[in-house]
Image (cartoon, rainbow, N blue to C red; front, top):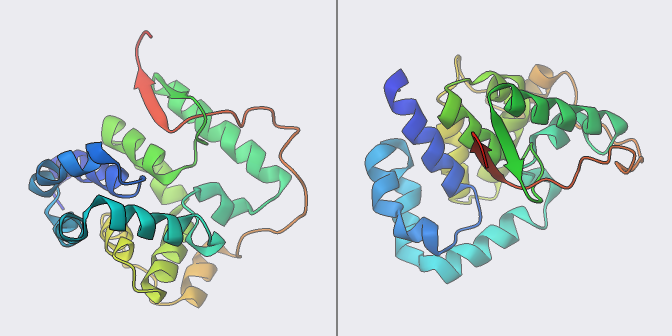
Length: 200
């Protein structure tokens, strides 16, 4: 993928991986024009319609940890360290003049993709590549069209994707940590999925 076409791809991918609302369906043609790699998914979305895709989205992402769209979960699991990782993400956004709005966490993949589209900085994707690859494999296992989006996303990153979980986990060094500790001490979890820049 040419560097100049990446912002449009990452912006379109952010919308594809967010809950499919009316705004998403109104922009399908625009996304397809700017991100050819996502056309198979977008054509599927247009074919099945909003109600069916929304139901599939909820079934795919809301009930399965192994399909988690929050990137620090893949790195830290449910541990204290995850809180620190979330703080780091929020700081990275601020360093580029961007702020989160409302309640979504800063590691939500569509938020990260919006940041990458706006800044051209892919460091966060590279840092969380093991989690992205594990997500790609998990979605491919259940044969969901959303696997096409994450596969296309991983293809924008340097080097080949791991072919199996063992290789992806080796890339990550380990799977998500499972320490049974809440995140309450890190009172910064009241964030939202939208990024904004400049004065509000």
